[in-house]
Figure 1 (spheres, one colour):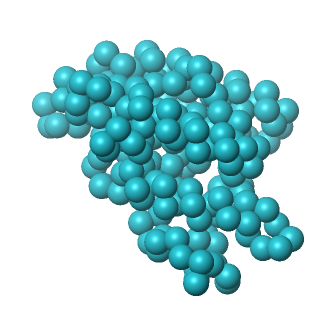
Figure 2 (cartoon, one colour):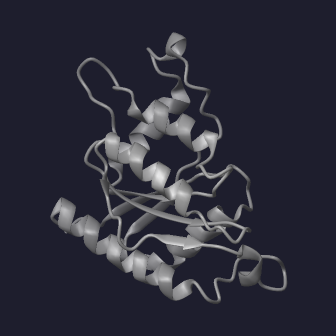
Length: 188
């Protein structure tokens, strides 16, 4: 049996963002049950049809990483009740056909969504907007359970790193559910 491959896409480019830390916690929790990689995409240019064909090398690279993944796990902050523009830009590139012979790479991919924010609001609105977009792109969204963590500062250790004291069981539940969701979708 081939190992499940999960690609994490973090909606923040900040090196120590809470959502990046949450993705790394998920990676640790998944352990050896799947291959878990974080997509690096800070080099993706702004979507511009003038440079769409041939696609920039950075776009080709991320498309290949998405194509080889069995499931995509989004980790998004919430900016002004929406997901970040860098994530929207990435998805815009991924939503475009690769060529006249190959469609866009997100279609049919299992997807999960998590998010953490310093505010009391959590990331529920951003996640709802993201679900609207990726559903339109024919991703297979695991809506239950989703994870939205408010008040990130209450779950930091003494060094200011994310410790997930209260939310760890919820992340564990989502990770287990997503592994099962992917396996069911792809027959592994």
